[in-house]
Image 1: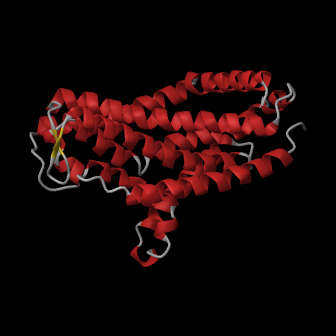
Image 2: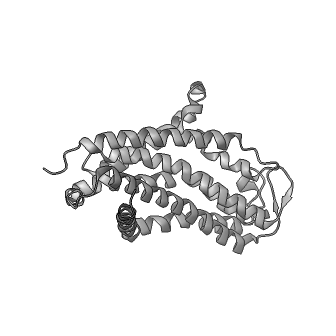
Image 3: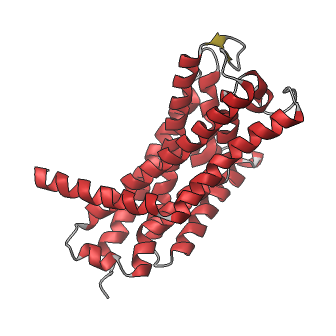
Length: 276
């Protein structure tokens, strides 16, 4: 790839990120994502709860504010984060086609594969931003409500905050990888229609269906192949020692989904008539 091509790719990516981050709808979505960890921290602080029953992250919230971020991530992974990715992915191609701007983009000319990959890179950055916003809001709200002392892991050992922060960053990266795979599915769906709302709803429905299938015990044979099956494995980062087998499987699965659906999206997009 020549310097000129790299520069053209960079300009296209900056333009795409500017459009994505500049939309009021997307900015409002990030605020909604950040609101949940704040609500969790405030609710538990006001109620005076000290853990007890419930998921591990929730029962440990009062011991360290970083658990607010982890609890919020585990909750938002089932709906809000996939919904945020569905909105971004659904708008990627279908939104441009619906507005009539896609034909002008390709008339510049911009190679279709470059345009598709640029939009996917923007979606990956969006996934990382969404997960990062939830984690950051959770750490800030949890820190103010419960403090940030040395962290007691889910295994009962104690680690310092630098180590805990490092593990949280790894958790965000892992979650972003899973969401990036969902973004590839959404991008593929977005190439099939000119109605962004259809692509958004379809992508959200796919995520919801995967969660439903993963919750049916009789489909245990299928669970290891479902994209969302290992999404909550980031909790293993907060055990001592770290149990990484589930995360490794989750990353390989995410990679597989990403490759398959990016290839499918390219196959559809390069043959699609967007000039009429």
